[in-house]
Length: 108
Image (cartoon, rainbow, N blue to C red; front, side):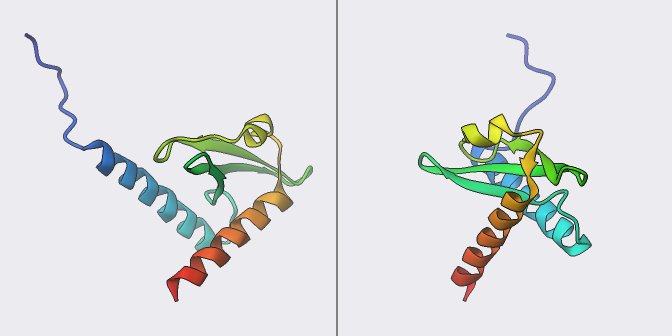
């Protein structure tokens, strides 16, 4: 039997952890630069969370374009999917603020 030209040595768990860590690093970099592009939103979904990353801003309409991130189980939120190209900036800012507040509570 012919072998594939590539060998995937990264386990599924390692890939999921790497994807999550890359998302968190991009978020920290965007925060440090003072931009919302690169920040991520999270919402509870099923037995985990759904993750979306901000990829563009429409300042004229105060909306964002989001990208669904296939992190862990890859859950999605129907409301987010319906507004992926015109997501409200104010809601996204509140989502990020709440996420940071909660993570700060558990760090102490």
